Length: 176
Image 1 (spheres, rainbow, N blue to C red):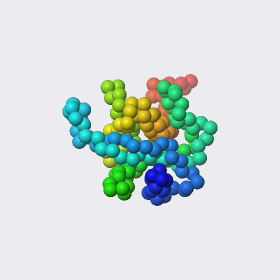
Image 2: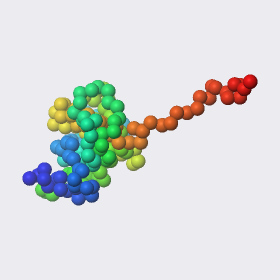
Image 3: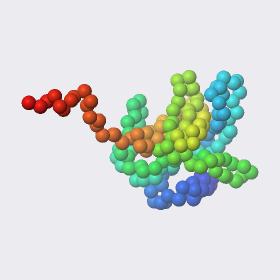
Image 4: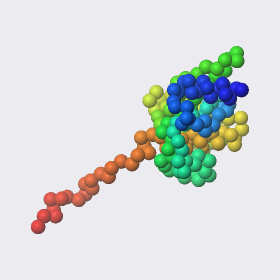
């Protein structure tokens, strides 16, 4: 019942066509919004529980493989037009939006080698940073891979730029 309530709330927030919406992942995450870069040096990190939903808009094609185990991921035309991460907090049995949805075409999803159980989502427009962690390491890695897969296929960086002229070749010297 809880899942249905959260999905309905997500559809109301996003206002996308119901036929093309997919819920790629959903579950509980722990998050923090670090105020400075020294947050890792402290011994106690306060993480707040939230409900997270990874929602996609579009009809997936045969190239849509978010569960692949490839270590290298390249942007593909997957049929998914938009992807967003919704963060909902619970207070007294009612759910409210933590913030505006994180549209993954405007986000960077990363993880550092020394963070085994954490990953970071940074929104480019507002420069907001969120550090996330799931219940266990495997679940954290699954969330990280899913978010990274969907973020790489969305943004403007997935389109290849046109070739630039070679400045080392001077067209004036080729004359006879």
